[in-house]
Image (cartoon, rainbow, N blue to C red; front, top):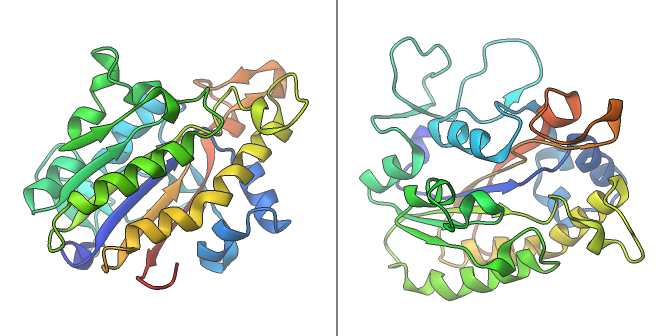
Length: 267
C-alpha cells in the first residue's frame, strides 16, 4: 500500500455486523454477483476481527489493525501507526506518525470523508462524535442508520452530492460504514417477524444491489481507488444461546475481508 499513497484515492467500507459464513455462502451461490465481481477470485477472505463491536473495531482499523488473516503466521499490515516494538509492519506497509489513518492521510494532502451508518457515527452524543471527528468532513442522518431500509441508498445520494466539491487534483479518502446488516434487518425479508440469518442474508443482497453505484461514484473522479471492504464484527442469532455481539464467539470474531484496486471506467 505504501507505494500507492498520493497516486490513488482510498476507499474503506465496513459492512457493519456482516458474518463471514453468510457472506461466503451468498457469494458461492451467486446471490451477490456485484460484490463477487470485485472480490479477488470472486471470494471473501476469512479473517478475524480485532474487536467484537463497532466502536472498538474501528479504533483498531484506523490505527492499522485491520482484520487478521485466519491462517497462522506473521501477517504484514497494509498501514500502521508507528509505535515501538511493532512486528507486523513490513516493506510494503505505509507507516505514519499519527494516531490514526484519517489524520495521517490529511497530513499528506488527502481530503478525508466519513459517511457514518450505525450509532457510533451519529454525533448525537460525545461518544458518537469520536469516530466521525477524525475526519475533515463527516455526514450522518437518521436515513443512514440501522432502522432505515434504504440506508445505503441515502448514503450514496449524499456521496454523489459531496464528491463534486472535492478538488479534482486532491486525493480522497472515503470511509463508508454500512448499517444494513445490523439488527434490525427483518425489513429486508418480506413477512419476517424477527431478525435471523435469512434476513441478514437479505440485507446483504440489498447492499450488493447498490455496490455498482458506489464503485462508479468513487472512480468517477478519474483516479484509481485502492479499496478495502470488510466487516467490523459478526453477530449471533441464537448460536449457543447468544444473540447479538460484543461477545467472544466465533460467529462474532470471524469476518469477511477483501482489498483490491478499482479503476475508472470499469464500473
